[in-house]
Image (cartoon, rainbow, N blue to C red):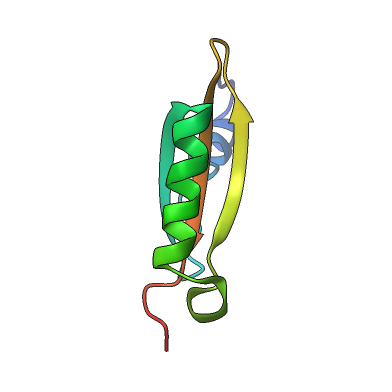
Length: 76
């Protein structure tokens, strides 16, 4: 619980999306489907052109994988 207005402001600031120009997509899939989805993403948006990659991932209880892919909006 926030005790000061500054505590609340800090907590809300942590929720902001980074303004670094990347587009992000988050997925929550079973392990095999997660691998397939990540491969498809990297095939569609190659790292050399879009600087794409897996930004973060974690294994959830039950075996699902939650992961975030990022890429630049264009290949310029």
